[in-house]
Image (cartoon, rainbow, N blue to C red; front, side, top):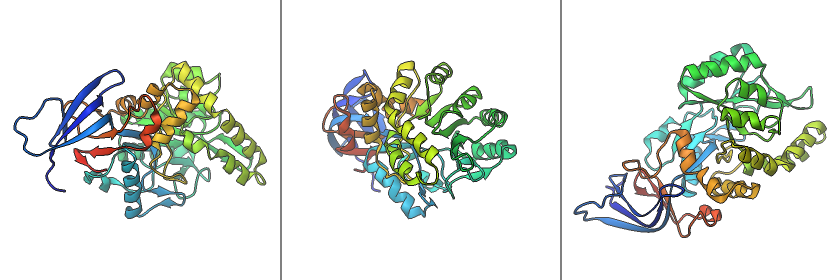
Length: 363
């Protein structure tokens, strides 16, 4: 890349939900609200500017069969970037994508290491598959390898039962989560169904992915403990097709998946209304395409979350939750510019006008 020009973004800069400025400058790849003196090479971009979008459940380096080559992972990351997603929490991948950290033109990634699942209880080639006695050791391993997160598979289909069921005994998850916290990592878990949630939350988990099994009994517990959810509604939309595919072998599981799908919007809205933190994630990288963060925000609005809160779930609030800056003075200049006010209509998120990453105009 050539030397960066000074970038002048003007119009409406959405620093926060209630803080709007008329302009921001990008100098040496960093945010500044002070006009630079004597800048000779200035590029101007106009529109509505937001912090780069966050996809808090994404899998770079993974497809439906497992790990992918680096060139495929690069295309995945570029697809997210072109859609305005500039910060990804990679919620489990068997691929080593550390090389992306050396690329200023690719989104920043916060890794949760590799999924940790019960033996024969998850998608083939995705996870470390272990038994409860080994869970603590594998959590410690992934806590050291990741970027402050560990990903468990909390439930999956039990083929003998013919339905979703919890993967881990209570004592195993208590010990595993305690070990992750001791090592400075937060823990999240894949959970579709109902019966794993109470044990995970009472064991101290920090987040639950999908969370379609939330009920009136467990939502207050999530709210009381401050446990976040990442609903991945664009992925939950695939449940009916999955249920149809499994009907002949696992009719009980298929019926369960359909029920979870049917009540998905009520589940998310009830959780939000109770005070459960909700963040945007797409589950891209398995069977789902990348670049869908804007579509997920629209799904949250359809579920009944106020548009400004749904927008915050992929911008200001999401970045605070992950410990990364937004449009703060001196922060890396990761921002997206739109033709219209995304607060008025979140659907504009799917059509960014300009994408700026580390101060480079990359899209």
